[in-house]
Length: 402
Image 1 (cartoon, rainbow, N blue to C red):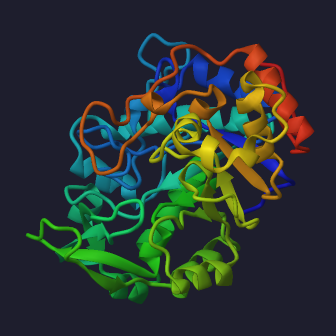
Image 2 (cartoon, rainbow, N blue to C red; image 1 turned 120 degrees about the vertical axis):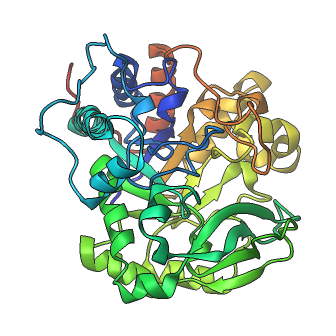
């Protein structure tokens, strides 16, 4: 990661904006981040979600989700005609052949509208953090087009852990890592290159699966009855460094983490993650990115009310009153040594668990649906800017008027 100093940012997916699209609200949110003294905007995966709305089980690891774009009639709508700014790469033809509809035009729209938003943000000192799920859906274009890169004899899951003692059955196909390694990890390098066109820094989900991954027999319903498979390890990251000259990554190293996973992360020198709303203590690693919560966890306020206030009262040290408690909590978190702190929008607003984005292991309309009811206000930007300033976290160096 190439943080410029101690910085902070906000996690808010496009679908959580009031309109849920790349419209004026998205540009106004960039302006809000600048006014709030923030340096990063973190998003969830930008690829087409599954039928349940999850962006972590996409039918393409490359194609943009055109449902995020401005609707016809919007001043930001791009009709997708012409070749200027169109996406490049073999994935485009693969997706056009696989998907229904005029996907070449749709992907040209996505490329131009998204790149315009990214350019607007970057010019104002705001950088984007993207999100890479480790796995892709079994009915994806990627599996259909490159079947030799996947082991279809087993499916992916997660081993039993403290947060999920029963384990998890995800159901996606696992990678045939020896085949990827023999090909120099070409498909993966193309995947990362694609997402680095869309964002400035990438979070790789389920880092431990790149060391050892949990696999289940196709008909196994009990996720505890799995076994460990061998991931690509250091060779994977050597290939990334060779292609990009560095590792523009954050790795998600939460859950059941063994010493070999820790050793690899330290060896490659990239930050992992710590999450306040999942922690039993406040002993966070200074070389991690600290999140107040994530899309998969309780909100900070929900965790604080349920567990944190009683068990970690020191996190609100300095509160002048009960009303000031949550402000003190955010300030104490921002004052940690970690180079980067990310605060989901729900936590900025002090929302409880009714505002969770996802509850892992559950299916239903309660997941992936949370949305701001209104744009964040100037007063809210001032309050966050004040906390950021007190915590001595450097904000954007460049600000433009639109």
